[in-house]
Length: 412
Image 1 (cartoon, one colour):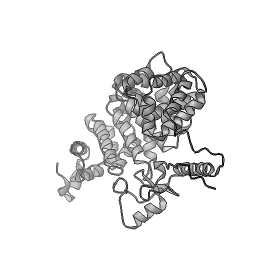
Image 2 (image 1 turned 60 degrees about the vertical axis):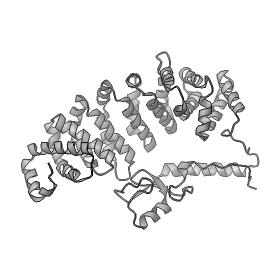
Image 3 (image 1 turned 120 degrees about the horizontal axis):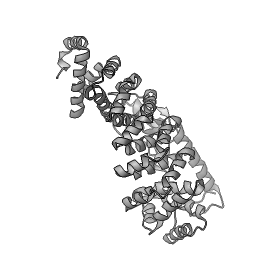
Image 4 (image 1 turned 180 degrees about the vertical axis):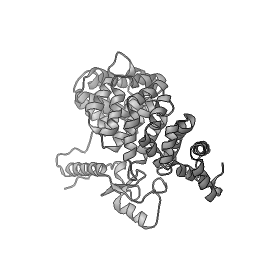
């Protein structure tokens, strides 16, 4: 007999954006948005050429199965069936706790009584809603207790659950500056604990750790402290190519972008081999790859191109330049802007002749001319004009020939 006193909450990520039902066969478009196969197929069969959720014009109508999401939905469905049909199941879960119960669990953590079980229950409670997370952050001294746990415990379940909980409540912590300072204190081991998670944790925990690090990078000082933690940036770069989980790769790239704003960290990023690492990601990307990941990879390259060391390495890597050119007008406006800015920095600002030659060989002239005809932003259009000057210098005959045939597209 099915119990009627159980409240079932369907995770929003499990619902198809079109039908709003739980997806049976989730598939992802080239925009990165996932739909139920039957719903998106019907949308495309009706002659639509846009992503229903973003209204972005599709570069390709092909879609790929989202196996990770399908597995999560299956696990959720199985656990739900067990819960509903179990005669011993309790109608009250850890996600529904009274204020007194929450305070009691917090007190248990403070006095080192059943810490692991209490943390597990609070993680479930915090995952339920923003209101629950705000309630936890409003309990005086609770966040400092979690920071102390992360600092003083060497690995294990306690650290894992503490990272999960801090990740969940991070955006609801009112005094963010104080939180960041406590996490980055030199006499604490919080960054070491997060690095340990990046090295040995599950994919989900690695995402939590990378997101927490990004959250802590609020100014130049914090970015430097994080980036100069021994082995941390190396591990982040390693994860960009050693993992197949797109969510993890995206989180790691976001973290790298966030902490690499200071000039000395940009230089360190280049010296650690970031150009080759992200070029591999960019070269392997295809129409089914996440748009967001491609945008972030190009942003990393743009960041590197703002320092001499980065421009030198990009300019000497013809594979990197070809991969950048290939993404112009192929992914999104954001990706095109990052790509053009990088090409402009290396080929025009830095005047790297070898890079200009590689750009020509990679069909860069055609891409720039097409870009000039597009609805690109004024800054991108100006950079395109500047790049055309490079082609005039290096490929006068080619440009003259093209100009004779299509003078109407030569506004500069």
